[in-house]
Length: 376
Image (cartoon, rainbow, N blue to C red; front, top):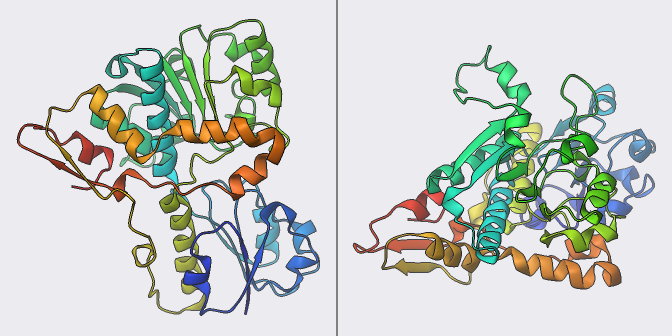
């Protein structure tokens, strides 16, 4: 069995090595000729899987994407071909939520903002929006969620007890964080959800974070607004037309990065693990490997806290594990010389909060770090 996998999938060799012959490929460069002999095709978001890619392949049995999003997959075509498809919903949701948390502590420090006084509006209440909501709740930060699709489903599924807000209410919050897939049709499209009209509703003091899909914001309208001197604070991890992004927009951002919000080692590897589990089910063989078998020990494993938990301590703790300014610096220094995909391909190791154990002494009297995701 020939297993083709994106070279940026961590631990692919460890998970799939004994299931078949492995062949790695560059995600954005995979061709129909290369994919001709794939029995199993494992991709990430930059590889479009459709008829054009599989036109020469007559025996593919399984396609998996190690990502939350599936807009790069022609599922109807795979269904016609009777090819099993699976994705990895939620695999990097924690990673993206921690990207947002690092962004918030960095901007709070930069502009002397009381983090705990902010209101955060979350657009999208799926896996990522939920993980972010949990972390904000751990800190007691007020937030609301807009998700008309999930709100409609509440009539049928009573397990979701959340109160959903309108998009207008979310767009009035101090911080707006976007976590939706690209939907171009239907009653609630997300393509250019923040168009020129909605962008003009935002005020000078707000923070706008996009860590889902670049096309959710009209980048040209955003650039035009910023060039007119609008004070909106921008954090962009995703961009329209990746990898050929609107470079002129970078100088108007507080933090820029190359679609790596979900690129923690755990987040990427969780996707690999989920595809391994799905393939084992397809092949009717036992699952005998798990992510913990392969994750390396973090460079810092234990931290002891001897004082009450407050914003300065939160700042130190979050940035000790992940300081988003590192990725912003890499992006600004190398985007023109090396390009978008090179930054993604050479992304340095990054861990999640769960890689560090936080010991709270009697003087600390707080369990907040553990609710944030640090080990107890």
